[in-house]
Length: 141
Image 1 (tube, rainbow, N blue to C red):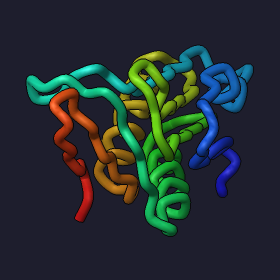
Image 2 (image 1 turned 180 degrees about the vertical axis):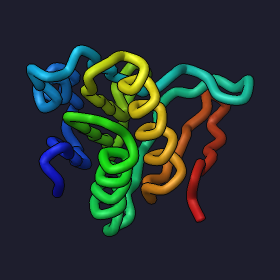
Image 3 (image 1 turned 60 degrees about the vertical axis):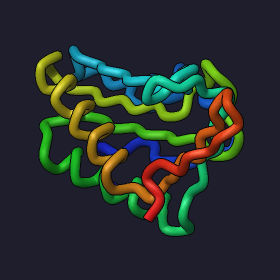
């Protein structure tokens, strides 16, 4: 991993936002942007009771590739991304990404690129359980 990619992980444990921020600690950076994706209680007009995330065996490698690309394409000092897998409850953090740069504008742009690319390219799939008992897989091939 490049020096800028400080953390890229997939975890079955609760995510620690402070640890992601600490991974991006950099004295040369004036901007640190953190995005926390949480489990919400609805989707598509239906109530959601829980989610289960499943990762393909290549997911961590793909996550590292995304982090490396964002670090190369943006003027960042630090990049971090962690995604949770397993059963999550409403309100749990499912994903945390952060970037540190000299200025806020680039930090916002890099963090947006990081979460958008992660969601589009890393093979992690969501099994949603709705309050009516139905299930839906999101992002599965």
